[in-house]
Image (cartoon, rainbow, N blue to C red; front, side, top):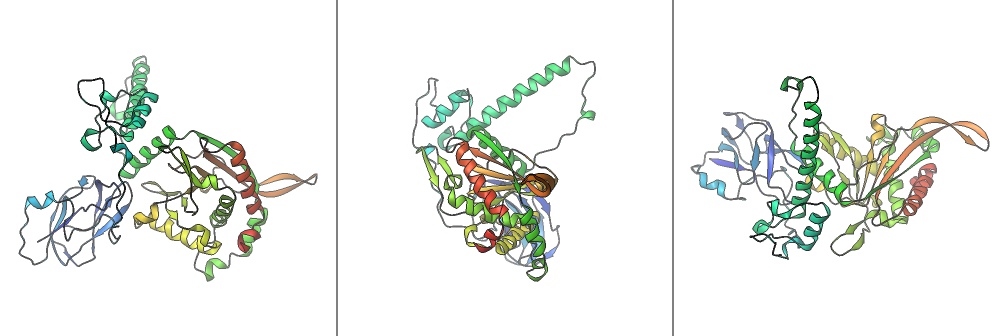
Length: 423
């Protein structure tokens, strides 16, 4: 018998949700056949069988949370090894499959958080383990550390615990207010009038990340309109590339190229704030995240080293990542190490928005829908193609003037698209 376990691949993944069974008890399977879909806070992926054999046991139902080390499927592969419950005590064993299928497990050791270096005596009868940074955060958010159960080593209170406690208190205040309003009405709200939709693992992750970003980063936004008439003409003239190169040449490929060139001239927007050291970290590589809408929620695959790619190569990579995100075949490496993010709400007909920064990045660019508008050029009213753009940025490490200069440079490249082809 062969036990297919949910293996530990690092990256902070401790559990996943059973998204879909792809086999049933009694099925004959071969090595590499997909067994089930697992959804984690990083990816949703097919898990393949590592052996040939017959499925004898399926542990769990769709929607169940599977912990690292638990046996998910048992396969009769002709061996004499008996199944024992003690096998589940091991987090990672020989023969266990990975949560992301064919993705190789990195041997890189992830450094420990600096939050594990200090212990402070609390005023209560027991020790509250927390760093000075965490204690200051609790004070700023008016959170009582004595009421928090720490999730760190030895019960240490982490920053994530404090954010979660603050959010729960905020939600409770909203619920209390709602109950007061309802009590004043002449009708009762019953379960028949309500629909309860459980949050998916991905949606929980999005909620956690957005809360972390808004709590941590003081968001400020700037907006502008770009005249992209020449870009529209250039793309129309080169639509033949779609067939010959086997790739769809979208406006986003041009926008990514322009963003990279603008970031090179204004590097602070490709940076982030190191809160512990109080330093601005400028990245000299350009990994551009692209927000992709999927049925399960928003994912942000990352185009690595975008500065080395031309417009056609960017279009190909964009197409590959978008397809993989939609089909649940995206790999963990394709979702990591972004330095700047672009979100395209214009695809849904919107013009302007104030997107939330992907923590810990310093900025996020939002692109709207290209529309034809009358504009004044040399005292004449003419019809031009206008692209609305908005950007949210971290006001701790840059000011409006910095972002204004970045947007001016970005506008220059998009309004003169031949520079994107020649660069």
